[in-house]
Amino acid sequence: MRGFRSLLACALGLATLSAWAQITPDRVAVARAEGRVVIYAATDQDIVQPLIDDFEQRHPGIRVEYHDMQSGDLYRRIVDEARSGGRADAVWSSAMDLQVKLVNDGYAQVHRSAETAALPSWAIWKNEAFGTTYEPAVVVYHKPSFSTEQPPDTHAGLIETLTRQPARFDGRLASYDPARSGVGMLLHTQDAQSNPIVFWQLARALGDRRLITYPTSGEMLDEVAQGKVLIGYNVLGSYALTRAQADPAIGVIWPRDYTLVLSRVAFITRQARHPQAARLWMDHMLSVHGQTVLARSAGLFAVREDVSSENAIGLRRQLGSAFRPIPIGSGLLTYLDQAKQRDFLRQWDQATQRR
Image (cartoon, rainbow, N blue to C red; front, side, top):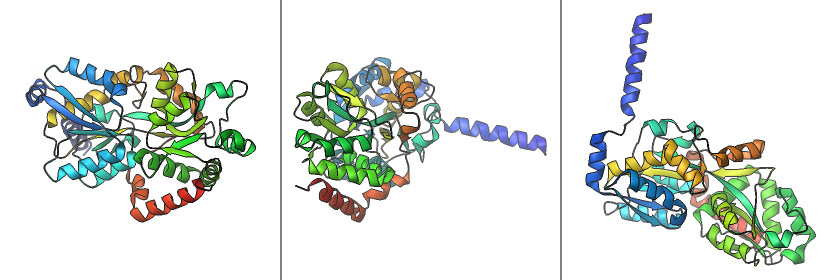
């Protein structure tokens, strides 16, 4: 009996290994014959260009056709184009909830490989959706305006600062518009679930100071850099840190009470016209090498725990118990229910449009 169990375990192990598609010369040849991989992404191309260049150098003959768009537009394009056979091969976005909905609704295909197997368990869903990065939601501020004081580094501290100095911050605060940004809706709803009392107190404090909302992190960072906005709340950390490295006027805070951490989610579309090229792209992005490129060249935080990336290690170490990654799964679908989304937006408007 013990021998039978050993043989069975061995057989199951071999079956599992065979289920993980490996990169073989035949697969590479097919991908090269396909000639390109079409990627729809809600990630600025200038940030991810080092990864694109690296992929094309390592896979000559396969061109990356990259389409950068806002997360809500990306979602609608995938749904609309699926009716005519689809166009994108791979989809990549930090709007985790919209990505999970697309996968849940049947727009993705299964992909198993040694690279997907190396991901943390929370970063894999149905072997179709894969977390590729850590993406902290940060607070940004105009450094020259805080030259003689420390900016608030907790949610309670931010509320207290806005309450104590109303005139100073009037019309000079920014955050995502959840009605125009899928990432904004995700961040704010996850924030509300994580700490509802503090979140809604902060939303009311922001509204009392005539909060300005934007559809993208880039626009918020532009306003902070120019000093028109003094504090931006719930800004995507990768964009903020990249801009802060190039612009001394921008400061970045990881709230030390809790910092939400998203992941850019990727999947291969069910109707991919270049499926082998898409698999090569996915495995390249999830490999130790690709994750290192993302971390070092693109300023993103690698999600793989076997990547010796100083920024990812530093993120987890610095945040400690405040580090709150959002797992990929069906729980992200809650606020995509139209009734719940309308209720949230109504409550958000009531809190932030108080003057």
